[in-house]
View 1 (cartoon, helix red, strand yellow):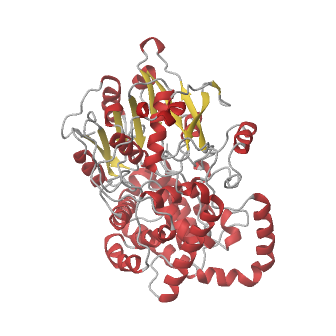
View 2 (cartoon, rainbow, N blue to C red; view 1 turned 135 degrees about the vertical axis):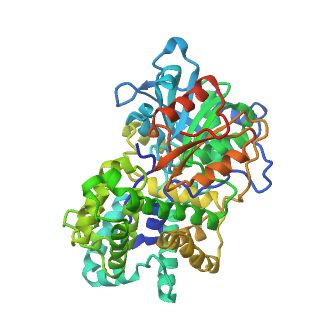
View 3 (cartoon, rainbow, N blue to C red; view 1 turned 90 degrees about the horizontal axis):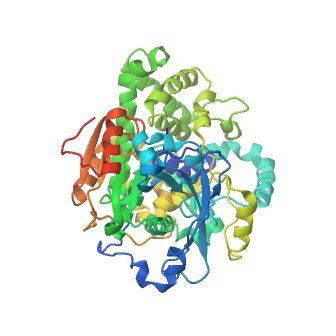
Length: 558
C-alpha cells in the first residue's frame, strides 16, 4: 500500500507542485527547539491542559463497517490552551481480533505530511499489520491537526464561491494568456535570471495563497504540536504508555514524541526514516539522490518486475526515453486527451512528468508495469496514461460526517480559514514541511544549491531545490537541525529499505544510531518502506518487537 499522499501538479503553481513531487514524505526534520533539551511540560503539572488530558473518546460506528470513530479535541496553541481555540481531530480504530489477550492500543501515522490516518484505517490499512499485532492491539489512527477531517483544516485555495468567480475570469482570459503561462513555468533546472525569477514568483504566490486562506492556523500545524496531540490521544485512549508505528513522515512524528515524552513510550517502530540532523539543503540532496537511484533501478530491473511492458530493451534505452520526455516537456507540454486532468493546462509539463515518474518508484511491484506502458505511449505522443497514473491511488480525506464537521466549524473563531477541499494533502504537506525546517529568506542560497544538487541527483535535485522556494516566504517554526535527544526512551526500532526512493537507507542508519539503544532492521529491496510490503521476515521481526518488545539483533537483515 502506498503511504504517500499523491497529487497532481498544476502548471500555474510550479513551486508547490515540485514540493509535492519530490518531498511527498520526507522534508521534515527534527521536532525540537534549537537547544535540543526542551521537554513538554508534564500535563499533570498544567491545570490548563487537564481538560484535554481528561477527555475520553466517545466511540461510534464509522461509515465503514468494522471500524469505530471518535473525535479528539486538542488546544490550538499549547502555550495558551485555555483561549478556547482548538483543533477537533477525527480518530478511528479497528478492535483487536483477540480481545482476550489484548495488550492495548497501537497508534500509527501513515505518512505525508498530509495523510489522514482515520481515513486510511477505514480504507483497510490495519491489514498492513501482522496478524500477531492485530490480535493483541486495537489499531488506532487520527488525522493530524490541519489535515483531512481536522476542524479547522488547512487550505491554500479560495472558498468555493471565490473560486468560481476566479475561474470565470480566468476562462475569459485563457486564450490570451495560455502561451504566456506556459512560458512562465520554470524548467527543472532554472539557469537564467528569467527562469529563476519565474520560479521565485510562483513560489511566493503559493505561500501567499496559503497565508491568505489559512493564516490563523499556519503557525500551529507543525510536527512538535502534532506530537503533543499524540500524547493527548494516548491519554484519551486510557494508555499509560504509547505503542506507536510511523511510516515515512510518521517517523518524524514519532521522533518528536520520543524527544518530548521519552518515558511514555512503550514501543516505537519508525519505518522509512527521516534524519532530523540534516538541514534543508542536505535533505533535498539526500531525497533527490534517492529518487535518481530508484529511477536507475527501474531502468536496470524493469524487465524483472514489469516484463514485456518495459519501454526499452536495455537500461540505456529506458534512461534515454525518460530524459527525452523531460526535454520535450520543457519545450512544450506533452499532449493528453481532452478528459485528462492536465488538459486544462495544455498537457503535461516537465514538472508533471517528473512527478509521475517519481511517484511510480514507491511500490515497484504495483507501479512499474503501468509506468512502463504510460512512458511508451507518452513517447509516441500521448501522455494521457502518464498523467492518470495516480488516479487509483488518490486519497479520499476529509470524508467525516459533514453535519458534525459543520457544527464544530461554527464553534471556531470567525477568522478561521475557509472550508478546505476534500483532499487538502498538498496544502498540509507544504505547511508542515516549511514550518518544521528553517529555510533561508534570501534567494542566493537556493541558487547556490542548484549546481551541487545537479551533480548529486540531476534534474531530481534541481527540481527539489526549486521546490523549496515556497518555504522562503513561510512562517518560521523556530527549530533547527539536531541529533535526537530522547534520554530515557526504551529501545526504538528503525526499519530501512536499501532501495527506498523517498527516505534513503542512509537516513535510517543515522536515525537508529542517534536513538539511545536504537535498533536497525534492514530490508534489502526496492520501494518506499518495508513493514506491510517487505514480506514475512520483516513482519515477524516487527511484530515480535511490538508484541513482546523483543529486540532486533545488530545487523538484522531481511
